[in-house]
Every structure is written in structure tokens, then in C-alpha cells.
Image (cartoon, rainbow, N blue to C red):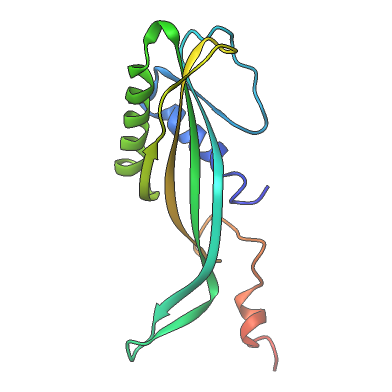
Length: 166
């Protein structure tokens, strides 16, 4: 599984560990996981809405921006589908949204650029209020020898710079 496609599952695992979010059930949008109907607790499905990868630029010694040939910048818009039981009221959706965004913004290493939500709607299929929300994360995708995360989509720096040729 690639780093990008595993991002929702990693975020779900991290959010589940937060004490202040213990009242929320977290799951990923894909693969689909069965939910109780009607809902008994607030449930949030985390997924990727959009992904935009562009070239990365760094400043050289003369202060000129040059393309970083080994890294890319990614703008990842995460989708948060927040479902709250009718008995909790629509404000439970907003409470969950603000608590989640606070954790992602102030307690995680994610670079949250913006966040927001739409209007709350009623879903009779799940007997729940539903709030679709998002958070945009800025990430640098770079192979690094000191990182525990490997980016298999990038070639080795040694191979690219020609240092292996004698």
C-alpha cells in the first residue's frame, strides 16, 4: 500500500488513540465498514477527497528558487463524513468536527492548511445527522535516508546523481 493511500487508515489509527476523541467511532471510507443502524454513537469516516501533486522548489545559495528534483509537494484534501444519531442532535456533528480539527491542527505533525464543513443533512437510511467536512494537508513527498517511511515511487538518489558510475 502506498503512503498516500494508507493516509486515511493512519489518521484513523491516530485519532482513535486520542483521549479527547474517545466518544467518536472512527473508520475509513474505503474499504466500506458496516455501521449499526440506527447509530448509537457519533461515527466519522475518513477518506481522501482530492489530491494534487506538484513540483517542489527550494531556494539555492543565491536566493533563487530551483526545482527540487527529488521531492514533490502534495495538497491532500481529507474528507470527514461525520454521522451523529438523531438523539444527539445536529450540534453533535459540529462538536465532533471542531474536536477533530483541533486535534489534527494542534496535536499532530500534519500541516493543516485549511478546514471547513458543509451544512448538516438528515439521512433516513442511517437515522443520523450527517456533516461532510474536510481538512487540506500540505505534505512533502521526499525519499529520506533517515526516515522510517519509504517512498518506493522514487528512484534512489545515488542512481539519479550518477555517483554509482566509476
